[in-house]
Image (cartoon, rainbow, N blue to C red; front, side):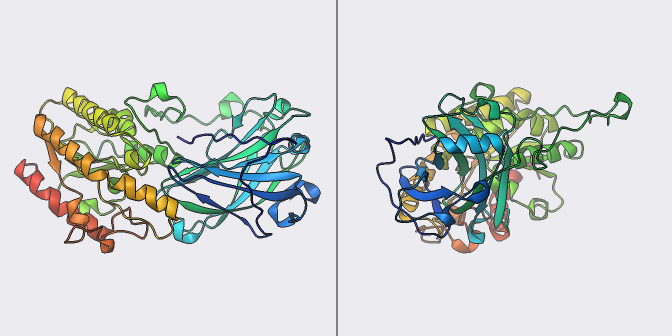
Length: 442
């Protein structure tokens, strides 16, 4: 989950490491574990309530400061403002931020939302991710995130000793973000603040769709998530599950492939297993705790002929620990075998990954470290398969390497060097087909 890196602004305290940037957009690099970046840029409150780095005066001591900090897997850039900002936000409660993500990195999973915090008030985040990009989504350029904070403006302190607006982000990989035109709009009676619509008479109320699909708990409600380790949620994940729900009748009794984006992105799964009863229940960004949560409704309620599970890449890159990962894998198997003791469970190895060209040195070092752990994770999966009844292991790691094993075969991966191409998926289908045939599932 996103971690909060606190940064406080007052007349007496500023960041220890500072540097001013020029009048162009504020460039912000989202670093992974052990990469700590701090930069302070002068910004000023422009006419009309706009807060923009374009108007910064390089030689003057800034009245407002933009502090970017990143540590661990998640980034939490913080905009620290003075007391005037509280008054501005109270008068203009619609907070907007323009961000731009370079197109070459726009196919990676990325989420962002805003939060406000001040002396004498409770830190409050926007109720949902304002920007929610599913893995493999392309074409992101400039977008505006908008949050109507009118419900909390009464909390804002009139004269705080410090006040801040936070941009909270999370994602799979390093990301260069350009941020500009942070502004406050609307206000009491202004058109920018949408008034609640009058309730419809009962007779005119649309009928609610009957849907017994259990929604994801909030990401912060850790007690509601089974298992141990990282938790990930996103609007697209809920959308995928809703689509699965619509196919629950037609997918009964099939071989169910379940996992993260390696499975979810297997767009030609049926083509790679022509005439065979296969169903896809992969969700991009998923982790083992997510599988544990949704296993019953998304998989077991289909009364599957077999389960093919590929999961772990996101646990690994989110600083998950191997013991927690194995605990969850065993719990998944336990649930499956409780439903059907004879149900075959095929554990697929975590696929290899490369270092994206956009990675800065700190990120590249981190990725090299965590990706080097994948073979050990796969060996542990193979060991589980060797000791548990009706559990099998299939190597998804080696087939995607160069012949000499020196690295990934880049021709089998998309440009992010994480997600396999259609060609790679077809190759993996050939690998797993032998096991499925040996089990007489085909």
